[in-house]
Length: 142
Image 1 (cartoon, rainbow, N blue to C red):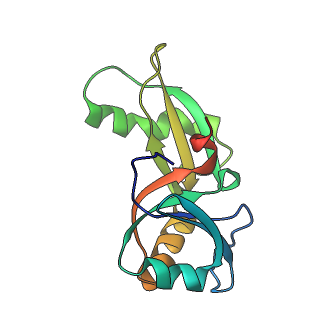
Image 2 (image 1 turned 120 degrees about the vertical axis):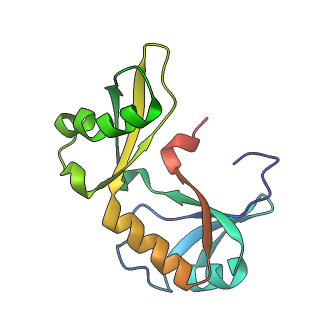
């Protein structure tokens, strides 16, 4: 978490199921202070606030791909074809997040099951938790 970031952070545990139960224990970081609370309590504390959602790395896949140089729109079109042979999942069922290109020209890509992600976001929205940004916990390591 960035020291100047005042946005609350909601961290889902590694074993987070597809259906979020109110009793699920999550990590919550408010004003830089971490705590463990139930999802129900987190929903009350975060109600209506924009939050940073931190997903468990166990639910994501990562790879590096080469994309054709040129316009970003064309690179986005090429992305599914570039990652398909590298991931052991159906690319049609994935949400792909493209990172910043590396010095060698390759691009980092994070992939997560799109239905799982959409389900979590919808369930959080039903608890009045508004997700402003999403990170994967492993990306936050120093």
